[in-house]
Length: 99
Image 1 (cartoon, rainbow, N blue to C red):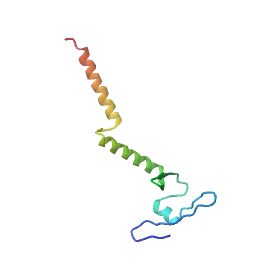
Image 2 (tube, rainbow, N blue to C red):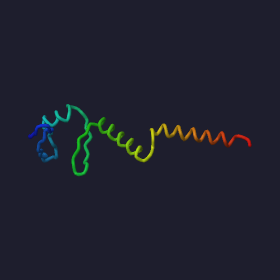
Image 3 (cartoon, helix red, strand yellow):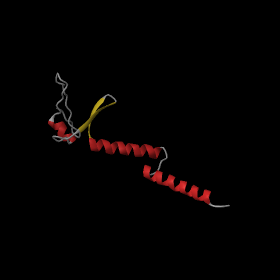
Image 4 (tube, rainbow, N blue to C red):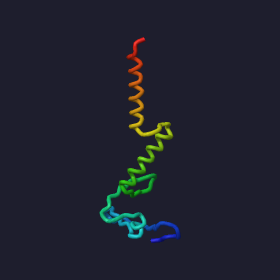
């Protein structure tokens, strides 16, 4: 276990013959991992990442909102649906008016 000033704890792990890993207590504490907590594990660019489910959901939502904004979409899907419905209702009223 090593820790440089201002850095999070780091450790080397060895997998058991059945593939299990034990995360050292200092790393678990620094990451806020508590007994019984459910984590999502995935591989990102060759790194194994453990992430709390709520944190993952919030991060993905933020990324989706940022991507939508970058593509020129303002507001949420509900706002877009309401705007589409209002525009459709306006078109219908114009089409119904006699000349």
